[in-house]
Length: 149
Image 1 (cartoon, one colour):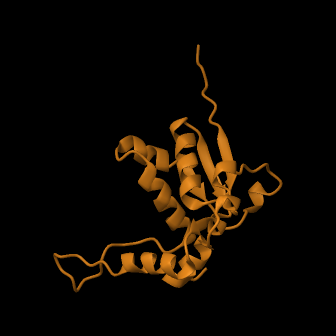
Image 2: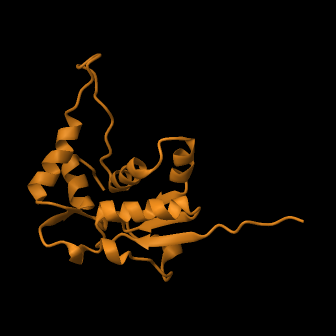
Image 3: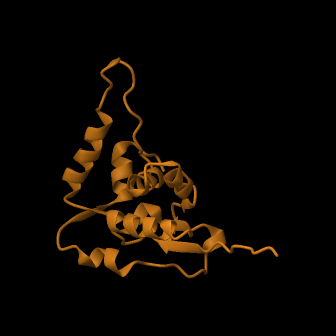
């Protein structure tokens, strides 16, 4: 008797979704054992004034090592895919289980042809309409950090 475990794949549209809230919902799905595909990753939203958000991300790029400050510093994500993935990674368990969960996440810029016409999920609790203040998309932050996409 062999039982096959069917893996559920959840496709999420990140357009107009608050990055942190979306990431926490993605982590919840990963803990349930589902595979998650995120499309339109560059259209996720970070709350805050544009200049303030960009400056906080640029500040991370200036960090150098104490061991040899003349060498390059810590690697930081610049592309929208890596910024979203890094946000999700920060919410996962810091163990081998968390690393396995991160392998079940795929993030795309735009919508690939293989997912066109499919049903996408949007989380109502992470919708941009909840924000009263200003916000900036991940794509704008990435371009300010030097992403050429």
